[in-house]
Length: 344
Ligand code: AMP
Ligand code: TRP
Image (cartoon, rainbow, N blue to C red; front, top):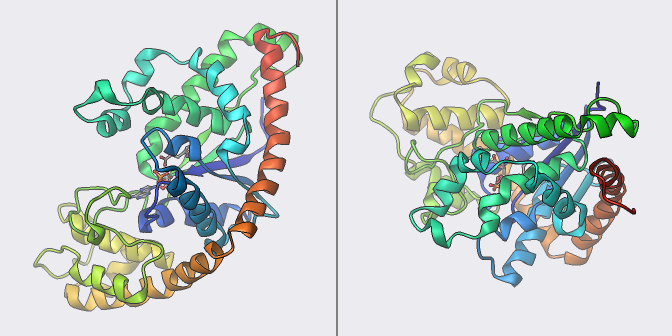
């Protein structure tokens, strides 16, 4: 059975949106608008899996929305909203909690990393989070999900859940005239030279919102001076840049900066090395600073302009939520019928 192609993705409103979020995710979201119907969600319910100060959560929700718009997502042609405004995400998550197996969740590496040593004290939500993520996607029966490399395992879980639901309820799905598979198996779109942007301080660690050092990441709201300073201070090795991509393999910091340059400029790492192979880092970093400032500068100022008008942001989210709800409630009604819940 073929499903209509639809794109869904989400970003957590947990502060410090950075270059990794932009290159690994948001920039891809923007590109997909030309070819697909897209739904982009600020996943506030996911953020809550670790403690968020309520006023910060609201502020960060508006800031991620502003970033979506500033980067070029069109909230009229596509759908932009925050997760908690569409109750069906949580409703479907319960059904999926009963489809997913404990053994599957026990394999999730992100939970192990985030819960750390004090696993007993992690929230139940942090543990069951991938089930909610599967619901986010499947409540729209989305077929394609652009994400960074770190979300690959969660996407595989979403596919397993969709598949098990389709199998477990196969008879009922057919009986109610929903074809022979109700949910598509969503495909991850993990593409380009920057699916895993690394810390500027340590090329073996992912660039992350929660790194205590602000020098580890370039924030989307950093001004030109901050961007320049962070790139100048970025860790490198003593060798000049190599001429071919294979030689980047054992040089994580060089590989990272070359990948960032390539992604910002929409070229390949090989293109970058054709231009800068043999150059010293000082030369390459100067070019990278110019490029980063020219791409990120306008995004940062547009974000700052947009967050000064929270009423506008809230109206975008309300309109997106209204349109999202139409699709989500249709799915949820069918799911209720399929699993045998009485009533509408
Ligand atoms: P999060 O901030 O965890 O909600 O992530 C939002 C999106 O950005 C997800 O698609 C992530 O996979 C992506 N992302 C986060 N960090 C990075 C990174 N360092 N490199 C590439 N993509 C990333
Ligand atoms: N788990 C994703 C992250 O931490 C965010 C997310 C939540 C998401 N629901 C999603 C991404 C659905 C893609 C599709 O980055």
